[in-house]
Amino acid sequence: MNARRTVLIAVRAVTALASAAALVAAGFVWSLHQRVDTGAVTSDAAIPTPRPTPVGEEFTALLVGLDARTDAHGEPLPPAVLDALHAGPDEGQLHTDTIILLHVPAGPDAQAVAVSIPRDSFVEIAGGRGTHKINSAYRRGMQDAEDALLAQGIEGAELDRRAREAGRRTLVATVQELTGVEVDHFAEIGMAGFVELTEALGGVPVCLNAPVRDTYSGVDLPAGQQLVSGPGALAFVRQRHGLADGDLDRIARQQAFAAGLSRRVLEAGTLSDPLRLQRLLDIGTRYVVLDRGWDLEQALTQLRRVTGDEFTFHTIPTGRPDLHTPVDGIAVEVDPDAVRAFVGELLEPAATATSAPTTARAAPTSTADQGDSEPVTLLPPAPTTSPPITAGGVPCVD
Image (tube, rainbow, N blue to C red; front, side):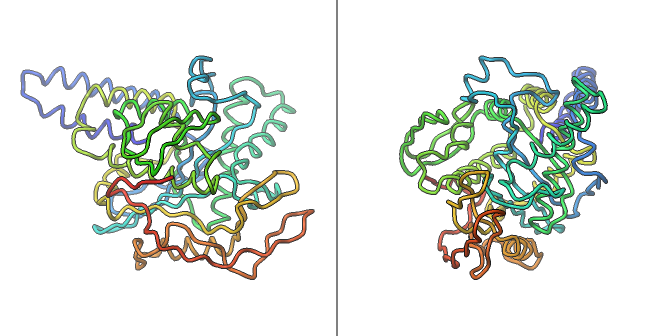
């Protein structure tokens, strides 16, 4: 997701080569600029009023991993690619398997935090669409728009483009209403883009407490520290069958992976290799969607000020992980008031990110409205002693 502007940073280093290579470097710069300007896919609807973020100012971005079977341009993925991804049958439903709020404060001592929202969180979907799993917000907004657009005679690529914009808008609004936080920027990547990104980076470091094997996700990895890439990396972050806490354990996997990915992107040498940068750019233009106002060069400069130990990952408070719902099956119980309080305190400039737990239980005595079902009292707080996952090491997870 950093490919669009990280290319420009590295290109400036290329232009500092000896004068004998100056013309070649200048041609390379122009070529990459052209590809960034003409090939990037941007969203006009995800953030209706784009807010460019000058270096040094705070921002909050919504990072989304989509189980799309197409690229960012709406082109179908080849069957061989889908088979390698263990994507399963295409049921026409776009789900957001990964939903992360990334907040980078202002100032030289910024302590960036990432807040995960479990995909099965049972929440109010923006636009009066009822209470459902949050991973369906994108699809529900998209489906409603499709119905209206088809009635207007709009079809084909334009139908898909405008419907997806409506899906992004619904997801952003849902996250904002749930957390009470205004989203400044948006980035979306599909399954195939995720796989190619890990391959371009030469793998991402992870650590497992025990060996895992799961036929649903396709994961088959030994215990201990290792590099994962390609379909193996996707399987690592997608597995939930066979994990004690299902979706909540998958969140820990995703956070540990994101910590390793951030180190991999920002470590020395990653952004100074022209061939690697070209591949990252190609991935970005084919699989990544950004809001039109996001300047990733500025965002990367912000993140470079953050050391790994200060970059922490958290999860919103949750109640029961086995909540029975009227139409969505088993979901994760969520108290919006507890979520807003937790996220608000976490993002306070004076708060110490490293002192907050990675996960928290929702406040007691509240109830969750399940529509036709009886309200269920949320579980009492469960103290945790494990420190939050940071980008300063390779945390071992189940």
